Length: 334
Image (cartoon, rainbow, N blue to C red):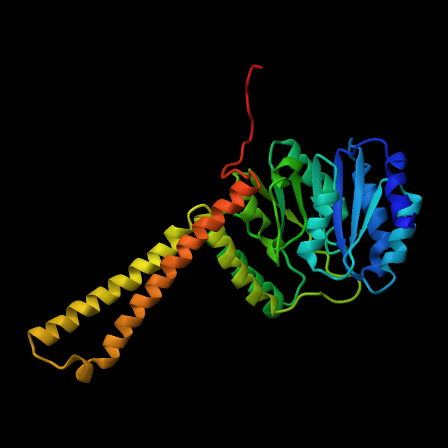
């Protein structure tokens, strides 16, 4: 039997009590700060009257991070280490952490000490007040203004307008959640920064609290200006999910009607020119006639895409027994 299998079988014996609080931290080449991170997180959560666990996700690190994680796991049974096979990115690492977290309250933060672990109790306090999600707000950024802070402000404003969620800082990982609100959350691509918008689709109660941006103690950021373009594309996905997930034909149908409407108006104009003015259409308005014909074809294609999307939507929900609604509470006498 492999060592991994042995560890999997022996782990429940080490931690018999299901934790109330899980702290999830994705890590990629964070060896210089890892020991300090553990000590500060431990000191912060021990101030709370909660049983807790620390879920550390190694996102394909190539430095000493895996070795340090294994040593931390050996000395503290409250630690769970998830080693990913390669570097999948922050979204996948966060999702892996959520999947392996067992607490009723889940807190996530970065592993580079840009977030102060000492602020974890403030997040938990807001969850205790009845909020489903608590999001950190970096009111003062330590990043370069033109390449990080300014694009981030633009992205946050756009995401807020599209999603209808009043959050100033979508990008920070420092957040707290009730476990049940993450049950139907599935993240792909770079959607981790859109978690407040995705959770809001199910009516989550969200609050934002200011946090300190400590800056990186070691190394450099893994993100640059190029991520702005990925954010813009992901924003289109979130917009579609929010407005048209259960009725895609309404989205593509609007495009179909627009194409055919414009084509119809062009047709009326060309008919008037031909039958009233006696103009040779192909000679005088040839390009316009071709454009109207193309719009008819494009409109039919969008209609077909909408019908196919309707079938895929039904397969998505019905094959997995998913609901198109989210239940907060049921009061019932058995």
